[in-house]
Length: 116
Image: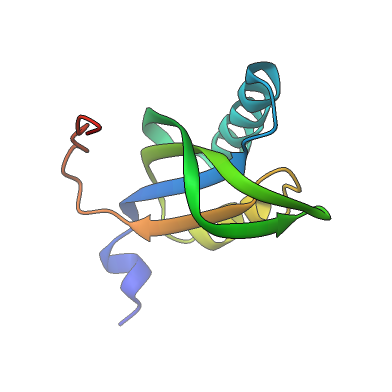
């Protein structure tokens, strides 16, 4: 039995990091590019969470520069499970995104936590 026939549409969570040296306009442009890729692969019920600029736990070298902080962006959405791998590949190929993590979500809403 094929697992994709059992779960044709699943909820997913995507978290991606953008270099902290970018300005707000560049971050918004990358968010638009991610939205476009999501529409291309028929993502639906999209919710965005901007976690803001935070220090990284360790230095990441991205495009030849050492990054010490990053803008964290998180989103939840539903997508056909057959298209999820292609969507992740398109995110991977976006040069301005330093790191990303795509997970199968449980469908529960994400709770915002207050920063201490």
